[in-house]
Picture (cartoon, one colour):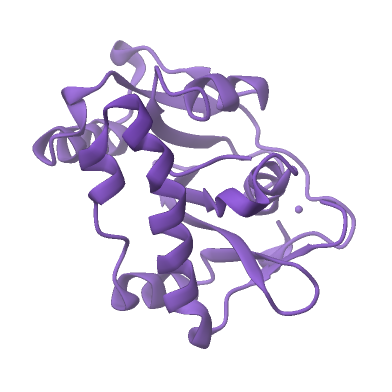
Length: 186
């Protein structure tokens, strides 16, 4: 999958580690003049635990119990919506983000996400994984609501888009939790 690591469901005791990963993954945004993104507070323990309890929180584990990345997913208008994928910079460029995204995939079900267009490890990265921009006229009600909420949060100070990967991808053998197999912070 990603060398020595594996994808698995998160444990309740790992939530603070996920917040640390989120903070570290946000730091590279400073160099792009996006300090507000870098300074954004990670999801709370309660939010992360809600995803965990619903089976919508995957982590990448080194195999020795150290978590180096995570993904949060929702169901939005019949698609698996990637709410957040973050990989610690010390683990970047090893296929961990791709493995997390593939682990959340469900065969025959599209995946969606929202992201920054001009951040190299955002929209251009997702395009390499098979995601394509969803034109504004084709946004589903749920994606329109997500984009409106992002605008309320001020994220539209930088160009953002919705992206979709049709049909998702089949889980790799021994795939991730829920039967589903290097992105930075979005």
